[in-house]
Amino acid sequence: MTRHIVIGDIHGCYAELVDLLALVGPTSDDVIVSVGDLVDRGPDPARVIDFFRTTPNTIALTGNHERKHVRGVFSYAQEITRVQLGARYADDVAWMATLPYSLELPEAIIVHAAVMPGVPLAEQKEEILCGSTSGEQDLERTLGANRWWHEVYAGPKPVVFGHHVVEEPLVRPGLIYGIDTGACHGQRLTALVLPDFTLHSVPAREDHWARIKRTYQADVLAAKPWIEMAWPDLDEQLGRFSRAGDARTHAYVTALRDWRDALERRLADVHEAAMREADRMTAAGDRTQLAKGHGAAALLFQHFRGRLDLDAVRKNAQTPYKLAQLSAALGLPPLPVPAPSPRD
Ligand SMILES: [Mn+2]
Image 1 (cartoon, rainbow, N blue to C red):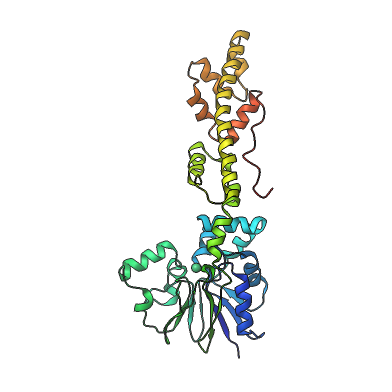
Image 2 (image 1 turned 90 degrees about the vertical axis):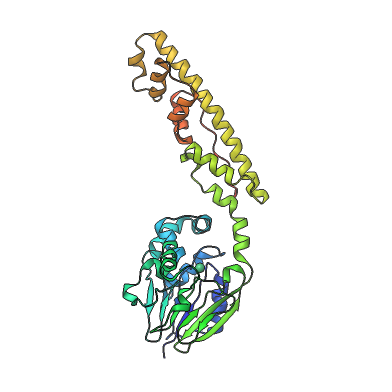
């Protein structure tokens, strides 16, 4: 007989997934189901994804974390996952976009986060099923701020879900089975086996997220597109990491600040060089003709009109990349690179 082995939020905890499957002992007749949130916060999203992408008789549902990647909504946990997955990131996200939001079995409905009580499964909103921020707000507006959907839910079928981290599986027999027992936070990874509704858990190896969020700071910083950032964004990012934790991150932020200082000096150099070039053209005669087609033409014409100050240069060179182009056009040396990658 086919069993469905429904596993709570895995969040990149591959070792615990292996432990849990060893405990439950799936046969080739069984189907392994993830409630979603395969990635983010844990050490090994690639192997968790590979397991569900390549193992026959497995199903992964969409969690709010997959949805964030699919929609390009990035907070720190997603930036870390992008670094962890590296070159395969886009392909993995394309796969995430194909995942369903629910699975209905004869004995239960399986979703990532929630269902709106009293609404048939076919009419449930994806946002509620996967627990996106807007879905949670929708539930709160409908049910009131201090009521959980799983306290109100009255059937008809049992609902199995994750998303909501609990110390012990959250069970209302025959109705509610919440099985996110916080594997990525150092608690446990839990499976509910259907149709028997038996629970199985293995302990987490460590508080993965506490460690991951410290150790990936420098890598997340290095992966940012510094060259294409507008100055206010660049300064905001540097400010955000100004009290960064470990030595590696601190060294990287210090290097970025030095780079930023060098760019500020370069803005002044570009200002000087553009004025010199414009004055040279004025002395040579037909300055309008000479300035046309020059890579820094906008600056040259501003100087002809007496309007070229440092702010005007900054408005023209909105990013380090544009500053590099103006530098080259005015014969200045190449810009320094942001900072060596912390992995080097
Ligand atoms: Mn989760």
